[in-house]
Length: 141
Image (cartoon, rainbow, N blue to C red):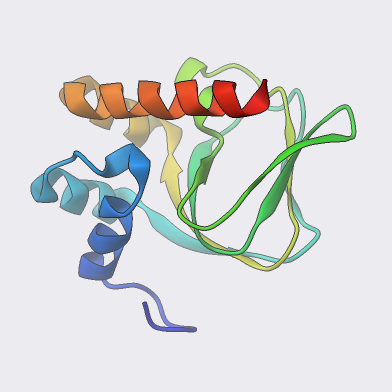
């Protein structure tokens, strides 16, 4: 991954393959997902999601960390090679959490509708998402 430059599709594919969420996806599918993502930068302190608001995308963290809060109380941190916005993106309901960048963040942003389209075509990816959700639940107990 080159610092300060946009990732190539190949670099995005390699990054996606390194995530638990996409580790079982085939390269062709990862290439399609990579093409649908947008690389974004978010400044430290910036709020990405607010409790009660709709979520338009999931974010896959390339570099940096965010804090996930509920009613102003920190629930967890999300860092490199992790995703956030996943639950609200799946059920299309307003998010239950506020997410803020703790430090400068670089992430791949995947639109909610694109994510749903991908899931509708790939059962193994659905299983991976369910595994990721189960892990999040276990970590929050």
